[in-house]
Length: 83
Image 1 (tube, rainbow, N blue to C red):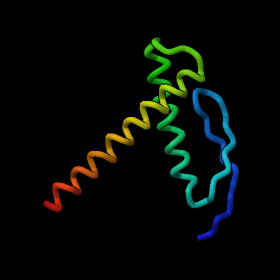
Image 2 (cartoon, rainbow, N blue to C red):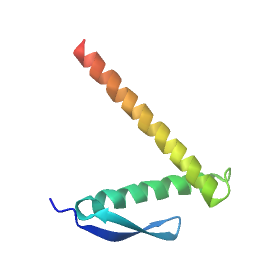
Image 3 (cartoon, rainbow, N blue to C red):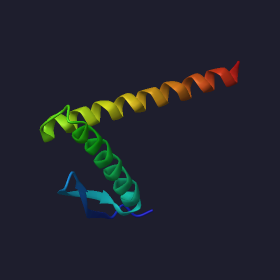
Image 4 (spheres, helix red, strand yellow):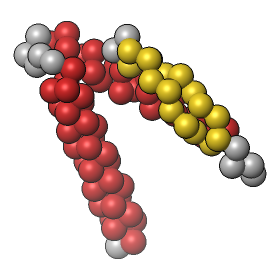
């Protein structure tokens, strides 16, 4: 597999970001940017958090929590299967 890096434009909360990304990971980057955009819009639209930086931090915190929950659930499932 080639590790050619291309610059990809992604839009998050109506702002454009240029991101260097290996060609074979571009679709994953696009999906990740869309997921982040969706999470940030949810937080912004709730009206409880103001400011791009705070919205970004809250989205990152929520996504990290989801990731850790999923990792723990996966780990617990594997443990149960081994018993």
